[in-house]
Length: 119
Image (spheres, rainbow, N blue to C red):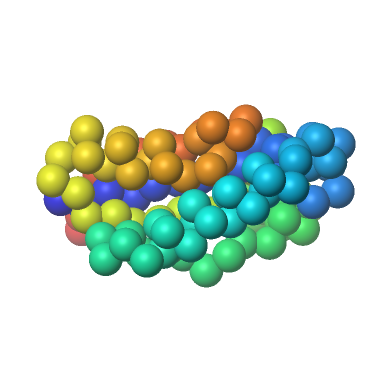
């Protein structure tokens, strides 16, 4: 079964935030090592890295016109930091993989959704 993991950074590892300065070098290295291990899994397909939320531009349409707003739609703490697609036997197996994502333990969160075709 295919699941999409939506990774919310919180502010823990975002460069330039006060929280990032409080993360030890050992914790940073462990987080990077976790991502190396996840990317080596055959059932994990990571997305290309996203830029920082402060560099996001959000687009909505009002009265047929595109409206551009600087910044992320959800705000800094809940900004999406990335996503991945995993193949897992069931939801519990997908949750076990999501728990390995560093943001799940470092002030962010990982949302797990089954992949569904709507068309």
